[in-house]
Image (cartoon, rainbow, N blue to C red; front, side, top):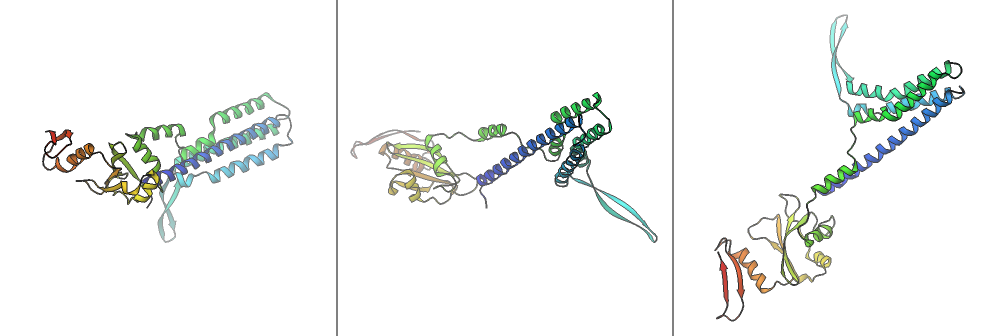
Length: 305
């Protein structure tokens, strides 16, 4: 089963391929339009290339209609047709293209059909006439500005949002990490193939000059934290294995794990032990504010409840 991150990456690759394909189609349409403008302009002065231009126009338009995704993107309407026989009649269902598909086909074929009309008119009318030049100018400006073929395809298959807008949405949805350690964990350990894939580091707390504790949470809600190899984490962090421990979080389920790195200072370790082990059961809401270390007769602990 693919993880949500992998699914998002696959979807991003598919969207990127679709954008590139749409760009190729758009540029191909511009080249075809430029060729039509050249053919129509040449037809104003000489009829030598009219036949070839007509053939190329019909072939390009027909090929585009064949590959137009009308059957995939447009729905079909079903109608019952009555058929009379000598011994009675019967009904059968006929599938017809929807209004959207027919409109897209007409819109896609409009540039080619109108160009063919202009070329035929140029061939029929002898000499150069101002009406022919006006027709060429209107066809060229209208096709380049309106892009009917591209509009027809987008009518059947809506285009994806621009990359800039998609990137803005992704940036807004990504949460900011609360500490440099959490950011490091996300970039080095939580990546696919890393020491702790699909996890998030939270509640990072420094317990000493060279020690820390944090909570490892599964990135997918309701899923347990995957098994994390201490040896791989030790190599990634360049910390001895015996200074890294991963265990359960008191009172929590398998979706979180407690990570400790290094040897905690006595003061901080006592505060952590009190907050996690003693206060929740014996004195809820009590917090250690000061600890004095000495002999058994002089040790004093102050507690605020």
